[in-house]
Structure formats: structure tokens, C-alpha cells
Image (cartoon, rainbow, N blue to C red; front, side, top):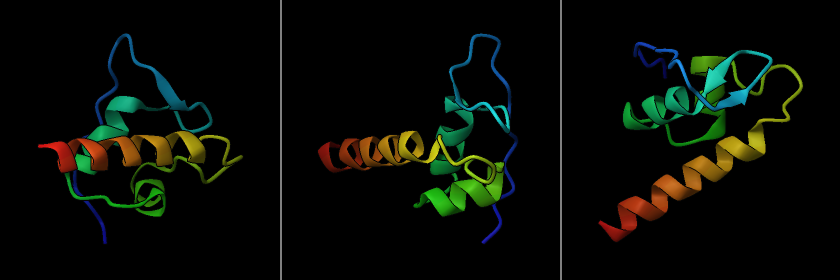
Length: 72
């Protein structure tokens, strides 16, 4: 399921994936556009495609976003 979202690089961004230069902002933008899994975020951004060190961080961001939605 492709998502067509602009991936904007912030000036003072925290990188989630150094291999693909994917920031937390990029991951949050994917989630806001409907991504529900690390695989979907990988397909959109490329994060996790190379060394996969970032997958745990992506999963943590996804879990946190689910918790925030549950609270709201």
C-alpha cells in the first residue's frame, strides 16, 4: 500500500535510520498518513532495509503512537 507523503528533513532532526537518513519526523509523517507497521514504514522510507538496526526504534515509535491514540 503506497503512501504519497512528502518526506521533509528537519534541520535539527533526530535520525531513526542513519543508513537511509530517515528522521523521527519522517516516521511520524508515515504514521499520520496511515502506516501501521514497521514494514509499511520501511516500504515508504527505506528505513530498516539495510542493516535493520533502526527497526526497534521504529516499533517503539509505532507503539507510542498507538498508546497516544488510545488515551485520546
